[in-house]
Image 1 (cartoon, rainbow, N blue to C red):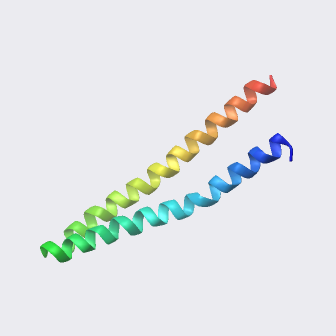
Image 2 (tube, rainbow, N blue to C red; image 1 turned 180 degrees about the horizontal axis):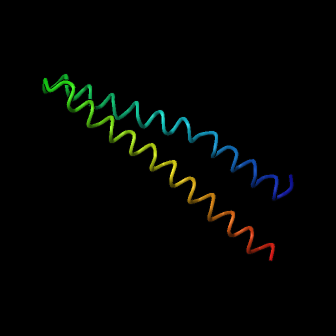
Length: 81
């Protein structure tokens, strides 16, 4: 397999996991919040707080992916020059 094709397949594999990472981050944050609410009787406050944390974590993962892809693209452009 050509090196360039391998690189594109790796990028595709990483990109296909971003949706799962965002969804799982939100779900895990909500699950932790609901569990803590059931332990402390504070429903829905901790669930909402940890839901927001989950959303933030999910989009932070997405942002890191975009920055990494941009950096790789810039490196490719420098190599072609």
